[in-house]
Length: 117
Ligand code: AMP
Image 1 (cartoon, helix red, strand yellow):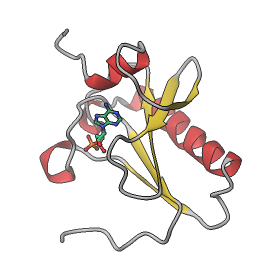
Image 2 (spheres, protein in one colour; image 1 turned 180 degrees about the vertical axis):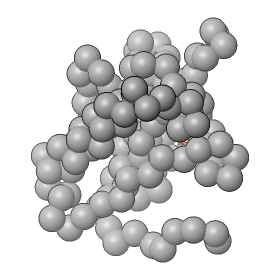
Image 3 (cartoon, protein in one colour; image 1 turned 120 degrees about the horizontal axis):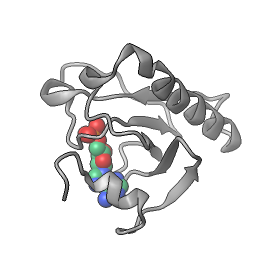
Image 4 (cartoon, helix red, strand yellow; image 1 turned 90 degrees about the horizontal axis):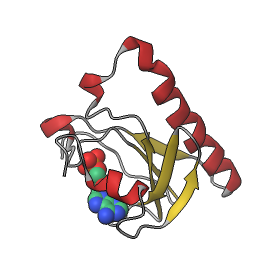
């Protein structure tokens, strides 16, 4: 694997199976393998960005596209009116485990409070 290569790159190339629910030229989305809510989908940009710390001001569109794609998915799936949560984890304290920037979409039931357990 290349230095910046993660399991998400392998999912994007269809080298390992995943339930991919959306893809366009900029990003792709698939169901989380260990869902933390009835709906748990990850939105991943195709450009390599390891963490939010590595995001440049010139790359603001990358995150904008993730948010817009997640909102569109929620609308398509009938989740928008009840609502949902989006999360980007960063590094150790954020609980990041895969070092390719991604946005979690959590939905399908009332979500608990979040913060320090
Ligand atoms: P994070 O902890 O924010 O880095 O999120 C990484 C997420 O990737 C976790 O919620 C994992 O359950 C998920 N994940 C890891 N491997 C896979 C996989 N092969 N397919 C789908 N989701 C995965």
